[in-house]
Amino acid sequence: MAENLLEWLALKANLAPVPLVHTQVYFVFSRAILSAFNLEIFETMKRGPQTLHTIATTAGLDQRALRSLLEVLVAAGYLRYHDERYSLTRLSRKWCLKDSASGVAPQQEFNRIAWQWMDHLDVFLKTGASVRFHESFGPVEWKLYMEGMECLARSFSKTAVAMAPDLSGASAMLDVGGAHGIYAAAFCEKYPSLKATILDLPEAVETGSLILKKYYNGNRIVYRKGDATRDDFGEQCYDLVFVANVIHHLSDAETKELAAKARKALRVGGYLIIHEYLAPEGQGHAEITAATLNLFFGLTSASGCRTEAEIRKLCESGELKFLKSSRFIGTNGYAQMVFSRQTTARIAGTRDSGPTTSSVSIQR
Image 1 (tube, rainbow, N blue to C red):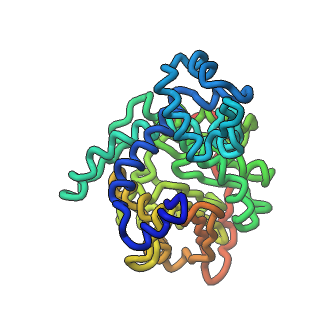
Image 2: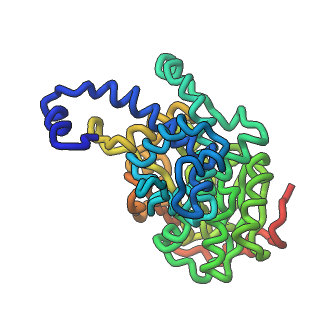
């Protein structure tokens, strides 16, 4: 937070009004970044260095007001200023442009909706009643939400497949809550024998099926509209059950039930893979990102982040054993946890053909 030696010394000596920085400065800073995305400042500038006048004219903004925003972006490393021209930096070219493979612009659009949920924080802290945003979404919110999840999955999918156990010869995968289809597509791309079924809410499937077409045009992925907290997953019909960013939306009882249904649906030797941001083990050891996400997920969902030990306790059973946990680099606690369906001896004749598939269709 300190920008020079004097500020560092002031912080160390407790002379700086840190609460004002964390509130007045940080919330303005966050909103400035959201406005830069919303007003397409980065898109306006991707053609090369431009003057303040050119940017204001192109974007249709007030020049004097825009200068203040651009100075914030320069200070934060999103822009560079040289010879009276502003230009994008490596940071903004990678993360802020819509045509970048790593771009997070859609997630920023969704964050403008999430910003409003913070008005409920005091009520949540007093009553424990969360927003449960999925229940209030309309078509616009679902579209922005799924496009935001697309950004995150796109960043993690290849690494997720690389960290997963070898699935050579596997024939069937169930992706729970992954309507954008990016994880299913990544696994199917690596394993030619694999077919995937994506189970998600009807509203998520409507948008997610359109997103999938950008990444996959084969015939080995199908959709099943439903609710993972209510629907049965089948019995010994999958080699992989994949659950990314779902269980922080679920209560302990719902998480335990989901794991039980996954165990039942897995063939012997099959895997349950869970992606979640992990809460730190023990109180008082959280880093700021993990602690903030834990509060946010608690506010917006049923539970919030859990520790690795808590997830293991909810998911492990006599036949479903924890194998390993791997962290995604640079995510401050985002992990892939792997469980395996085991028995004392392999059961002969339990492998079936799994779910039938025909193009990227939707089972109603």
